[in-house]
Image (cartoon, rainbow over all chains, first blue to last red; front, side, top):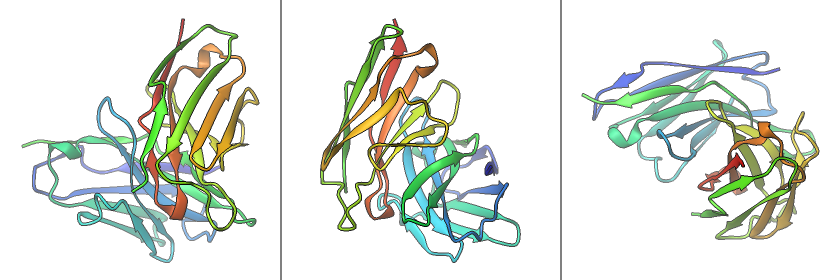
Length: 124
Length: 112
């Protein structure tokens, strides 16, 4: 069974870049059946999809965040990463990494496995 | 952008009774491939969200059969046939057409 674990600084200063890494275990990040994604949740609020990546490097981003987001993959470490630039207090949230599976029949099963989430606070 | 709405935003249910949550999308979620990209998640208190339903009505692995999904086009429903105490939390619908995803605002379910 897939396991995902987020890691990175819990505190980021305004205008700086938020950087998080998700380590995947129990499966290969290079699997052709999976995309990998980032989803965030501001304290007390709902869920917001940030973006997704395929092992080949193909990416999909939330249009509202696209200008500030970069998601990359490191197949040698079985990890994928999130960078969010020019952060403000509005970017304070729990950040989750998750997996999206596409079955051999083309069925898309998004976010079946999640990390535990990591709180990132934007503050000086 | 596709906007997702849910009703009600909160729901208090007696154990053993049914519950129903409605989700509407601002555009049809029926893709040209014939599939409808609508999903349901439950976030229990203090936990990461968990997938319940994919493609409108298919239960994810390990999801009890008291959960069922239905609907088409822009109107969808999640039903719990008999609510149990462990079903408390916030339920989110999510659309994923074209692999771009939008969540609904969530429906908080608690037990009377």
